[in-house]
Image (cartoon, rainbow, N blue to C red; front, top):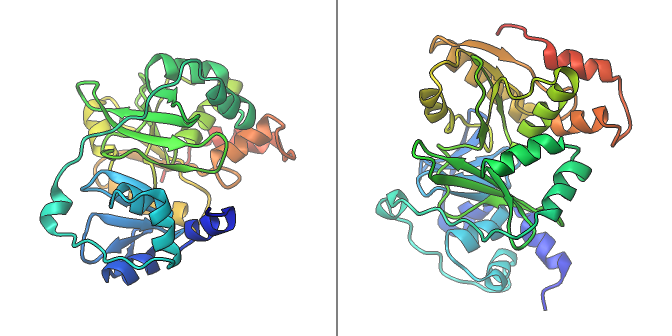
Length: 312
């Protein structure tokens, strides 16, 4: 039997070191990410745990996600490979294999999403009306394992991207076959688009705005599922009325670096651009302060930051 300590050890392995040892891959740090030199669409975030292989449409957190999703390895074997208990030859990853598209595999939906509401509304503090609205639009559901599933659609309203968030453990990752070009989003009718790293931050921002103004549905919101802008071209092409971009990425080195790089890129494309980071690390941290879930800071500072629009 594999104990929790061994599983935790496997989950904390540095992905850059793993890719180097198993496949001989090397990486270059660029635009807030580590980019693979051998496979240009493979990227690892600054935490050296979160990864995404764009051409495969697969991403996740840590070595175990990679081995089970990309190499289709059983969980026990993945742990043994990750911890060095068992040695196995790595498969050859050809360019032809890399470019072959995959079909999105959505997990089975549960009946009544009790864990979803408990996790998002009680633990995360997200407004219940916002959660219910997204469920009714089929953008949000609970799977049979109790995970929250966030879904992104293409122009034909076909699911093309889905990410998971565990309600009982700190688990996150993308479903097999996800295409990161189609991000989780809320479509409004104004000319403003808010941009976030994660769906939970997106909903947290909407919840704060609802608490302050009541008008959370006016503006559009998009989750990048990271710090790269892969999801932006499709969304902007489908929402031509959007003229103002507000980057709300995390208030850490990776988020700030990505925000400024993307701001410069989209200013050059003719958009009005602003950068409004959260007061704390991310907007769910800010929301929990507003809701008194965690130790309070000056709530007025949170609202002021939310409503301040300094042009880039």
